[in-house]
Image (cartoon, rainbow, N blue to C red; front, side, top):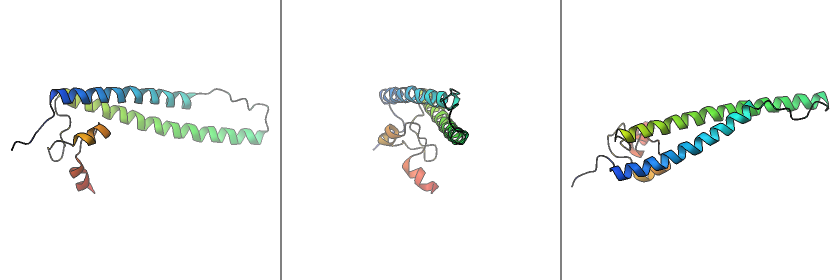
Length: 125
């Protein structure tokens, strides 16, 4: 009985389509995050009490910091997806970098940038 060592071109094309859609959505999300933390628009607090304005500015700073962290994570996600596209081009996509076995197709549909099989992931724990 032969064990499959790589995904077929048709399967790779299916993954390519999925990843392209995810990159497009992730890029839109990233653009939204960036615009929200780069927004220096005034929220109309100039004629409110100074105390309220201080709370407002503190809240705005925390929100910008949170959005910056989310944007960094989103950029990493996009980079990982683009690396997965390179693996598709090289026809090494879906091969576990530890065991050398194929990563389960269901796992790849859920985590298309995965480079480890569940078996390898469990060995890390």
